[in-house]
Image: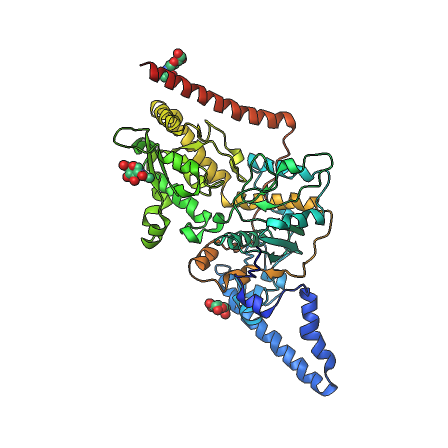
Amino acid sequence: MRENSGNVWSPLQRNLGFGHGSGQFGHFREVIWRPFMKLSARSYGLYALFLLLLVGAFVCTRMLDYPTIFAGSASSAEKLSTSKSQIYPQKTQTIPLNCNAINHTGTCPRDYPTTPKNDPDNRPSPGTCPDYFRWIHEDLRPWAHTGITRDAIERAKKTANFRLVIVNGKAYVETFEKSFQTRDVFTLWGILQLLRRYPGKLPDLEMMFDCVDWPVIKSTDYNGPDSPVPPPLFRYCGNDDSLDLVFPDWSFWGWIETNIKPWEALSKDLKEGNKRLNWMEREPYAYWKGNPIVAETRQDLLKCNVSENQDWNARLYAQDWGREVQEGYKKSNLASQCIHRYKIYIEGSAWSVSEKYILACDSVTLIVTPHYYDFFTRGLMPMQHYWPVKEDDKCKSIKFSVNWGNNHKKKAIAIGKAASDFIQEELKMDYVYDYMFHLLNQYSKLLKFKPTIPQKATELCSETMACQAEGLQKKFMMDSLVTSPAETSPCTLPPPYDPPSLNAVLRRKENSMRKVELWEKNYWDNHSKQ
Ligand SMILES: *[C@@H]1O[C@H](CO)[C@@H](O)[C@H](O)[C@H]1NC(C)=O
Ligand SMILES: *[C@@H]1O[C@H](CO)[C@@H](O)[C@H](O)[C@H]1NC(C)=O
Ligand SMILES: *[C@@H]1O[C@H](CO)[C@@H](O)[C@H](O)[C@H]1NC(C)=O
């Protein structure tokens, strides 16, 4: 059943029916030129006067927005009186949220800097991107030789929530089906912020996005000699049996339904939270709190909870979202959850947004064998960033991990630190945007057609989403609004792995897992002898 739920984030835009591909020039022709053509010579002057007043009014309202832009800039008054390229000088270039245009005409502002006047490639580059960016090449490899045709994209529509098109730096969206909660809203918001961060740098492209948890493009359907080209479909996670393209999830811009704030601010809170208790002072147990109902493996985990007769070194709690909402999320403050030496990560129905929050604590993350990956988790190494826990023997595996850590404190502290450093440094918001940039940039190079604005799409800009928003949604949007273009270019995308180096990475991972398994086996063998 596919219900056309329309465009919920923009009732104004929907009602006015704007953005149906007339483009900037079409707009000009309809609104300004046509009435002009119809005028007699006498009213010619009146119309000219009217236009003049209109332009005057426009300039005035625009100027009202500027003082904030130039706060702290000495020569702001001079700049205001001259040309537009000086209104957006390179250093102080700021893109305010301009709700005037959207409130009064229902259209996105027309003065976004889509191509910066100053050569963006002259900006300093922050160096090479983290290693996990190399997976971008692996994810796109199925299309490396064939390219991506319009037909392939249309076949991805079957499960997609929306189609996103970028043409000349502007975003257009066609919604097929509302997503669960506000996943689609904040994902689109994130892409709009990417456009504000790198104005004029994103190529034209068209993509299909599925906001549901599980990957659906099965590789076995596409690996025969006569199989069709797989449909490219973006989503939040993938696994080894699928070809879905992984993209950063909505929570980086906020998850209003659970009161989880945008990552930029939350990662700072978590960094502070880490300072409250050093590792040695933390509870020497493994902690987990989450919703057990979403997966059998989580219910299985709860069997390892401490009881009167058994202590597996685990302290496990069920998250009751209903009650948390009522009590104002007092008990789900993530920054105050770094009080145990070990924290368990276990997948839910697929990958879980919580992984970055857990890894951000200086505690040792015990990862129960995962089946899914998201865009950054393939950069994690067992024994370096986390400790692997067996899925089919969780309790014994947890007990052994905690014992090992408590007996090898220096090594345990190093693992906890490596993970929180990874999260703070390699997963900072700058890199989240750069990952999106490079993924979309590489993806667009594969397109075999020129993207055009679809008939049914509406133009999307930060204003269509944020000006009308209310409550927490508005707050998170304003908190995560990109207010000026990046001072630097995106980081440099590392080259693809060659087969031997990819194999080496996978082997290293595998060997670490085997090593831990062997230690664990020895531990329990000796244990049973006593
Ligand atoms: C635009 O409209 C929204 C909601 O109707 C309102 O909160 C906001 O203040 C308006 N902004 C401007 C600049 O008119
Ligand atoms: C696990 O045990 C602790 C301590 O007895 C208890 O407070 C907690 O509610 C238990 N967790 C679950 C999910 O039953
Ligand atoms: C357990 O037994 C193995 C083999 O007999 C031995 O190498 C190891 O040191 C013992 N102790 C532990 C804690 O694994």
